[in-house]
Length: 80
Image: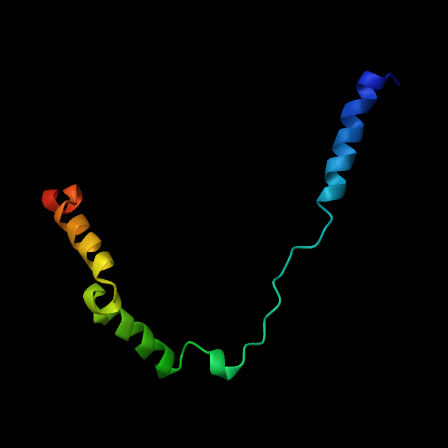
């Protein structure tokens, strides 16, 4: 058999060998109860940060001034 006819056969054989691997199944990771998202403490802490507002979150007056200027000069907010 000539090498030109043998090459496609070898490539096909090599590619079929790759498909014999079993499908990957991610193992379940044990998570302690203290890190569960269903606890109210974690959800309430996230809600407090969202409801706090950026003026109370940032302490530095220079940062507050920069954010205020950015909000005033934001073209997207002006168009909306």
